Length: 527
Image (cartoon, rainbow, N blue to C red; front, side):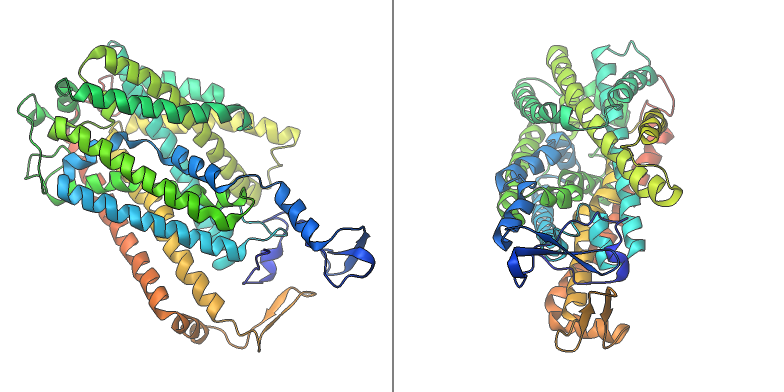
């Protein structure tokens, strides 16, 4: 089925935004002729014995992913539940289970909003590839730029978090004998060298391997925490002497003041909530997944199964580890293991998966920045040209150096992860889908097919009205759905503001002396 573009503004058809391809042949063409529209609106014909059905099948041939592949891609992108025990330590059993359930359900709803808007706006002639494309067609250039900038920031910060966590891993492996900054430099240099690979194709099977390594680490963590004490040294080094070795406590409700490593009362719960948001943070890539599907309508199968799988795995793992380690649950969980041998094995395996993820995120992040910023505003050459390849080689070390500066300046894994969750991930998983949902639905329902029309020659749409009156008329058609999406949008923004506040408070406390780690210091957060 061919989707239609509902907002036919002339800018939407710019080949600078999306490379146009041939449309389906017109069913009314005589002698099996194919009609092709040129940039000036004129028509050219290619002769050939090709039916509409054959044309559709040919266009789908380059889209090879099925719903089972999408299930795998979603779980590959998101699966990494090692922050969940720490989140439960901030919220307690009851609030933790409720919040993970609610945010999991809302993440699924957001996925279906992206799915719906994509189905309507994607076409073979003007394909949708990213969130920026969806925003461009729904709101215009300003929204597209906002989305692309935030996506670049999220990828940049995600790489910095990976450097930080793996720097901690290297420090633990060396038993603290290496300066923490040197540990960060080692991982950053490795990422910088692998980052020179411009195509992701060669990293594909490594990414698949990373999923199974993460699952193995989960089993190791569960086996070790059930038979050994928590890593009291790491917890005390990261969160202060009040969390020195002592009795383990678990809480059915919110932990009382001083019993949570993430802060006191509401602030601690918010920091735990930020980790829940981080757990469901793969929606940024949903448009790219849909663009690779032969039958995008089948996304719901992969989305539903992936969301249920992630929810069950995260909840089980988080509750299991928290039940044994209580307030001493550490983030990431495998660095909270006390036996050195198991801790080292987990750290080595995690460093392998972390390096793969860092290179993937860095690769995508540099490409997004290059195409959407340098090419869009500064007329840089395409990456496929010789000059483009030279610029790529120069940008990679600059990108990784910037990432290193960020993580060396803010060596607080849990809080910087929560900050990224609140500033970036929450927007792509909750705020933006709601924004797209009501914006698209209102503009779609405001159209009057009997009175309005699209002129294919001039590429303009003839509106009968404009402004607030049109938007109000579109809103009333499905006022309940639009109202829910609007309040969902406002709620997401409020949650983001609270998450930013709690992370900032946590960072403030860490820099005031609760953590032994300091900016550009040699002491590791893990002790």
